[in-house]
Amino acid sequence: MSDNYSRAPSGWDPVADWYDGWVGHDGSHHHQKLAIPAVLQLLNPQPDEHILDVGCGQGVLAPHLADRGVSYTGIDISRKMISTARKRHRGCGRFLRGDARYLNRVSAVRAGSFDAAVFMLSIEDMNPLEEVIQSTVWALRRTGRIVLLLRHPCFRVPRQSGWGHDPDRKLRYRRVDSYLTPQSVPMKAYEKSDSGVTISFHRPLHHYINTLAGHGFMVNYLDELVTFKQTRDRAERRANEEFPLFMALRAQGIGAAG
Ligand SMILES: C[S@@+](CC[C@H](N)C(=O)[O-])C[C@H]1O[C@@H](n2cnc3c(N)ncnc32)[C@H](O)[C@@H]1O
Image (cartoon, rainbow, N blue to C red):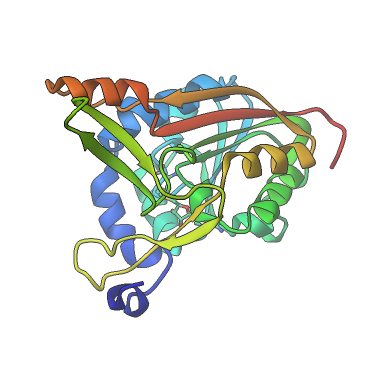
């Protein structure tokens, strides 16, 4: 860990302005071309459903659900993110400050009151997974659904994966140096080196599937998403088409455990 990381304040409050600048009102290119379409496809939101957006950030998903007649609730632990969301997406639903691990402490959230919960690019920022899923399941009806959109845990391990070039075979390959060991990784400080640092939690794929299943939520759809970026380089294009850098999954409650 570098000195910058240990000096910088952790959590999303210190980087909320930077993040809001990157995402804006309509979402970053990543949101527009990849994350939001994938989430909407798996979530398949229906009018009048109650949907919880966990780790909603500055609320970029809210208008997409409000447009479909959903009753939207966004929850985030960062005071600044919630205050930005309320300004940016007024009228799209309600934005509440709360910790995903303790949704039962958010007075406006009731047990079993949501049809679905979505984590768009947020589950990797939360730990422990077990507490987050248990708390989310508490807020959902027993046959509700959970949608996760995250960096692909098999191919994108923070600081343990990247691209390599094999000149003999003229190909670009994906290198993964470690995978099974869970890790908490301070992410780079944003803009100014001491402006803040966030922690990303890497877990192998089976942790997600088995934790959901342990709470009676079975995965019934998995999507592996490649980058939307175009390139003329043949080796790069092949690699881009071959390695999914994001993953989206949907789990449905079977009404058993709880
Ligand atoms: C990368 S941002 C994603 C925000 C938004 N979903 C988006 O796609 O723009 C991750 C968010 O998770 C939130 N977060 C991290 N830990 C949390 C927790 N325990 N409870 C609620 N929100 C949390 C952060 O404050 C941050 O806003």
